Amino acid sequence: MNKVESYFTESDSVYISDIADINLFDSAIVLSERERNRVLILGNELSIDTIVGRFGDGPNEFSDIGIIAPSDEGIYVHDPGHSVLRLYNQEFELIRSIRINTSGEYIYNLSSFKNKIYYSTSHDTVEAPIVEFDLIDETFRYHGEFLSEIENKWQRRIRSEGYIFKVGGSFVQVFPTEPQIRLLDNNFELLSVLDLTDLDLLKNSILRSEDIYLNNNSTILMLFADVFCLDQSIYLATYQDFRVDDYNSGIRFKRLLNKVIRIDYDSIKEEMEIGRIIDLSNGGGWYEQILPISNERMFAFDALTNELHEFAFQD
Image (cartoon, rainbow, N blue to C red; front, side, top):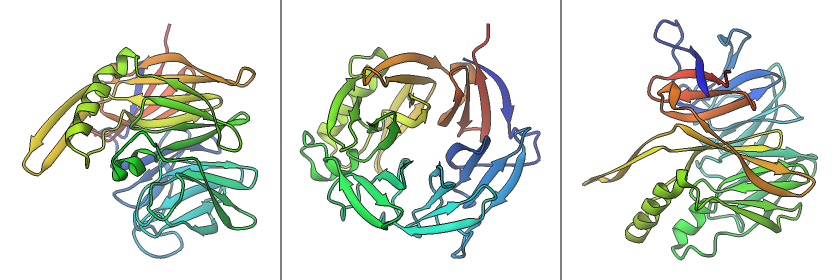
């Protein structure tokens, strides 16, 4: 892919930073900005059209804004600082607040299906990593299992938290620390696994992570910086470069993302397969959030310059 445009550059009058999430809602690009605890809705020219929220404890105020998740009911905004999930309509008027016990922890994404929402958490009060909330009965149920092959208890819970997407008649589960993509049925029983361990793009990171886990049980290494679902495809934003700096204060990771793995789901065969490797190195950024618009177009947020870059396949 080639970068075709940059937004929120130094020449623009608006400055954004520390984007927690980026998504589409009612054909508009929506961003949650963690630094200022607000939601930004972009207009047709990708300038800021509407701003909702600020730091505080009121109805449209957030303590620590997180993911944004469009649904048939509206758009959900997670505020882990208040342990609440808020639902807004198309005019960004507050419809409903749902208390969820994440105790300040972020969740990766949220899926909505038939009056139920699904998300994943590693909080030590839950009995399983996938949480189902019934919007009508207002009851919680828990599904799935923590990764049994991980011996360290803390790591087992943390690495069992991930993305859960409703795709066709199944669920796709992605753990950011693990190369295995899981396909689950409607009862969250395992149907199949797409193992990316032998993918050349991931081999270096997997080998390094295995070595780090052997020597440091309190460190988590992400293979995927961001994961997004569009139609029946899952987009995995990976890290290209990888450096570990061992300071006295601990281990730090500095990585540069420039590759996206597209996983395609075949609803007839109920199988997943690698569809395409998308190269974003043309943009030269440090991309922590991606937003695929179609198979031919994608946005990515550069955390180094705080710019939003647009990519497209060109002949």
